[in-house]
Image (tube, rainbow, N blue to C red):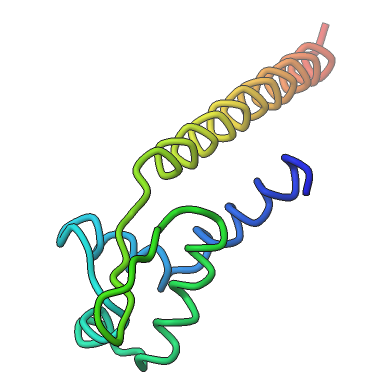
Length: 118
């Protein structure tokens, strides 16, 4: 799998509001199971398990057996990587928007100059 594909998977994983909420809950509690997490969200245990599976596949969480369940914990290294990617993309978009703004202002100034009566 290429780096771009991994990044796409990561972005897809954190793009879902339920998965972001799961990450928030796991960060706050330190860890949790599908059962304990489903008690805190209006989502079934099965749905939570599927969301956790997605987060596990992209490396944002790690699972460890805990009796009949699996206990999930956020992988802080992978989370830091995701945050860095989000920050990088945000900075790139900010730069693009500043360029667009400068172009729009230049076009407006040119219009104002040509619209003035001599």
